[in-house]
Length: 523
Image (cartoon, rainbow, N blue to C red; front, side):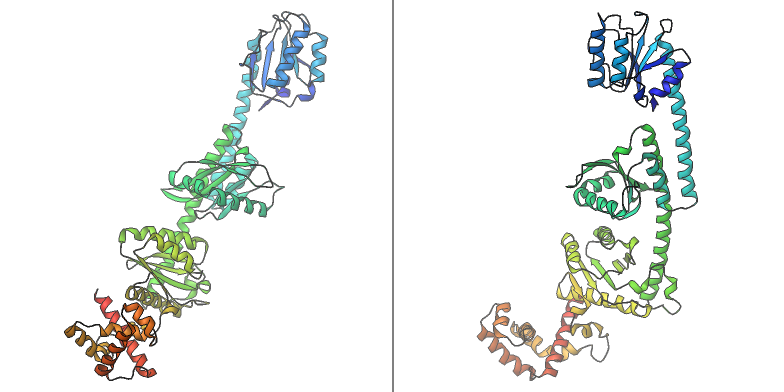
């Protein structure tokens, strides 16, 4: 920025003196122009240094009227009064300049305008060189922060101190990971501001990610004036790393834009390095988990993991009948549990999504995801306070069994605790003593149904499921309660088992669990 004072010092060497309005010597001069005619032209803009001989003005009163227009409506920064026409500046004009704090220069008649333009251009070039040198030093600081592997705050600090306004960096899940604030602002204010931005402008912020283009958003709080922020996407090798938010009031000129552009490069590079480290840690943890799932946990200790196993609470598995949607589901689960900022790992293993997570699965959030993917099923293990290594394989098997129960019962979401006696049926091994338990107990009914085209097998299951309630059973089977009674008489004849005996009841339910499991397994 070139000030009136700076140009006054340069012009004084040419005997061009500041003779009035010294109080506003800190005003910015952004350009120089000449004005010789009396009309009020739109060519004159704000912050100008206007040169004139005032030859076309008929008297001092007309000059002062024109100066009033230049001050009040145009808001010029200074006047250069050339004495080629008038041998001296009228005293009334000097007094007007002092009263209205309008910097007034007296230009001797022998000095041409071009000399003043040359001085201004020289100052502009000098200022630009100074700013370029400052930008160069800032770039050095940015690169140094990356090379020395400093945290993102060191980069954000360089940007923030230059633009002297708020700078925030958010991860892909809108969590703040670095910010710079003014001295009069508090951390809680910045946190509240970020929450306000995300709550009211989430869609616009997301567009920045998916269009790879910066955007401007407006944040209006009931207690404060509206603030405008620019949102920039941070990418590296097509990998999305997060967002940078900058208060637009700090973006003053092309030099600020240059600092921001170089800052984005540095942040992307630093975030990429950090992301590379996180990916390495994630891959190492995943390999250890997969060994545990396969039963190879003998030489693995808690200290081998990067995540804190003491904070892991459960394991879930997701199976999809549309393999093409598995990657989309993985993205949604990763965003749900914010794996890079919690003790969680989510990946694809054996054609299923596996999640080892810190946060207990929230049924409502899971259900929301499933509404977008009706072909997916989720099995969730028991919820543990602390997932020790010896528990991890057990929790993985529990989630697999819960997934099996989803398949058998045609459900989308099953928690380990929701499964009853079916747990035993799913664990019966082929060729074991109980492998044909379903056939041994239910075969008379199955054979009768096959020969007579009856429905005794399903009738008994429904009757047992509703604890001998005729009304509920008949309602599910769409028959009259008397029909249920008749069928039960026939069932008792065929099975010759007291179904109301607790032991027999349990054995029948186990047999049915095995029967349904085999049917769905064959499917």
